[in-house]
Length: 245
Image (cartoon, rainbow, N blue to C red; front, side, top):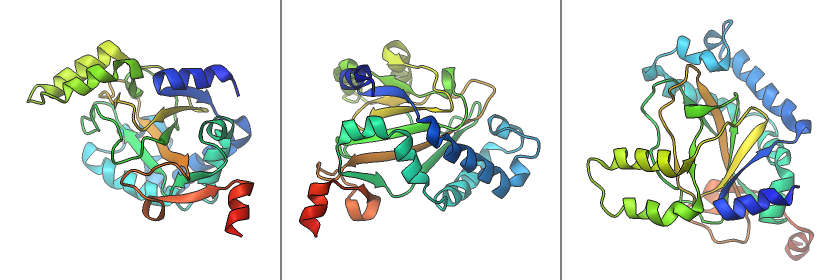
């Protein structure tokens, strides 16, 4: 694994990586299964064009059905991990736990219902990372805007004086200080749960599809989400196995 990726992650709190090509078949199979299981939404229709056949009012219901379906996919969590293994193993160590349920986000053009400027802590542990995987090529406002760690003190101050204009302030700050870059199918964005990020309104003519799932070391502190309720053990080190036998 390229050491420059770890340098970038340590400096900024986020990094884009290329997924291992050996495991891209799992993502392609997932997309094919979604097409098969929800055929009326994909009649001669690409994922990027979902907005042509469904309304804003219907999208969340469909998303929840697809999430339920995705989480029945055999070995998908393991293959997500394996596709980013080189980075995750060096980042988190040999004892790794994974979020029990994979999440799916679908953002259609001009849909204003989305999480705004935030970070995932303290609900999540500061020792977790999010792996964000687009199922379509994402560019411009299809992408999240990430806030470099060096701007976090400024970002925290925005929360000191919340008012009716705060959403505008967060958007302005994100455009001024944030990083927005393309992430293609076959790539992933990995970021610390303690990193501020912002989801702009999708102003493109394409629907964004993305998976997200969290990983952390088994022995690092937890947030409000604990091992039994939210995570499951993915892999353990020989020394951990020895002590458990």
